[in-house]
Amino acid sequence: MSAAVGSVLSSATAREAQPFRVRLGFTFAVIAALHLVAIGLLLTNIFSSGAAAVTVGAALFAYGRGAIHSMDFDHVSMIDNSTRKFVAEGRRPASVGLAFSAGHSTVVLVTGILVVSGSGVVNTLLDGDSTAARVLGIVGLSVSGLYLLLVAVNNSATFWTAWKLRRALRADPRLQVPADVFTPRGPAARLMAAPLRRVKHPRHIYGLGFLFGLGFDTASTIGILMVTGAAAIAGAPPLALLSLPFLFAAAMTLGDTVNGLMMLKMYETADADPVRKINYNLVVTGVSVLSALTVGVLAVSALLADEAGVEVGPLQAVARIDTEYFGYVLVAVFAVIGAVAALRWRGRRSA
Image (cartoon, rainbow, N blue to C red):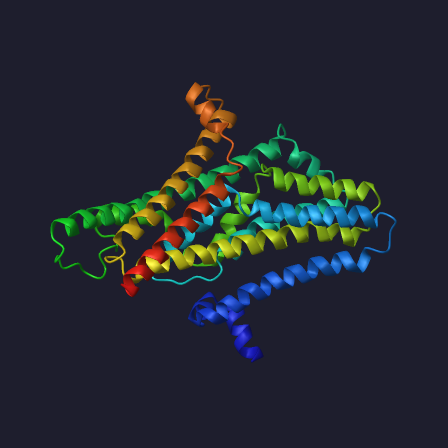
């Protein structure tokens, strides 16, 4: 048993060869372990200081902010489009959300440790005018923007194929359609997919999540670090303080993982019978492409307006768009699409 576990943990190929149920179990085991560590840190030290009440309030805030952060538009879009990419390649990933959130959480945890240790580096990282903060912000925006733009362009080929197929089937319902109709073909398709070929496994999404988190530009990330610093000033024990970034990471990881699994179910449904479900495939892929393009355009606009100093009215306006609730809207849209499709298919089976 231990040898099998070691094999699964040591090799990406071995992990992908495992049944989906096993990989799903490992995914939730990691999330559970993160929760246990966070709660253990909090409970072990919560009674060792007069600042225990501050720590409890901060812990509730940290967990809540982590859950809210997992609904950020860029998180939802990144996980959605990454899942779409893997499903289109014939894979069935169980840990896209976990991988992305783990990369982002690594930044939060390391920064939280620096806060608890009293390092002054954090003040520099959170100072938007500092060179370090600006460089990290450029890296975070560039990675997220470029990746999502590439995925959007790649997925747009699938959308265009589905659109043409829909028109062809309307003209001739008896049209014979090959099973691999949505497989990208030709030099143009290969050129669009080329930059994404290195993203082969969910673990590669970890790197994207890590680079993405370097920007320190979200209210949730800044908020948890500020609360950790405030609790430290109030006299909360060091280990209890460490529970705050762990609680934030635990909630964010759970939310991101559930989002990834929801999108996996939707895209597998679309791929199960793409011809019969052509309208469903069109809508789901179209929303996915639109969300990726939106995040990519917002990231590029922010880079040009804030870092390159491009003072163009429309560009400045796009860069200042508030996307606080966009993630909730996107999740709601996908949920409605899935529910409506399920009701229609159930009605057809019972007819």
